[in-house]
Length: 176
Image 1 (cartoon, rainbow, N blue to C red):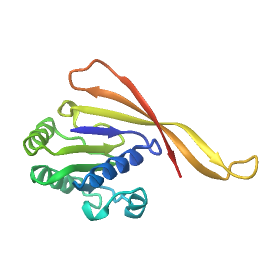
Image 2: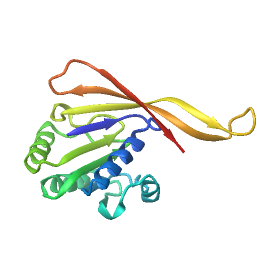
Image 3: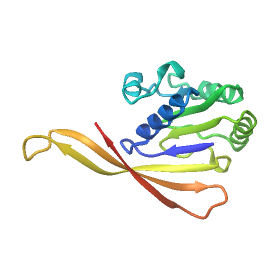
């Protein structure tokens, strides 16, 4: 289980879209459990995600139902990636629930990505990556910027099983 955490406008949704695109391009099936109805299929399709290979579960704010859905999907064979997007107010999973989810993921050999503003699975997660906005690039004909042209997102490993403290990884530029 991998957690992808970061504040609003930190690039975490862009990294999520990149993961969805990579999984669907390889022909994998993806399940996305969207707690706060934040997924934008048209933006994902424009970024290269094959929506025919994505099962989108909209929980409409019902966090308990979203957790049940992701637990069920983690046990289903056939998915290359199961994503739980918990949004800005993520629920705190009990330690028992987090480790049961981890066991289900290991048994089914599915990749699981949990996306949100903060970490929710504690010690049950094998990797936690934090996103942060490093720089913005503006474009426009005048001195004052008129349009956001790109953003540099920094990625930092904040927890990795069996590894010491935070590790700086890389920066990624996103362009409009």
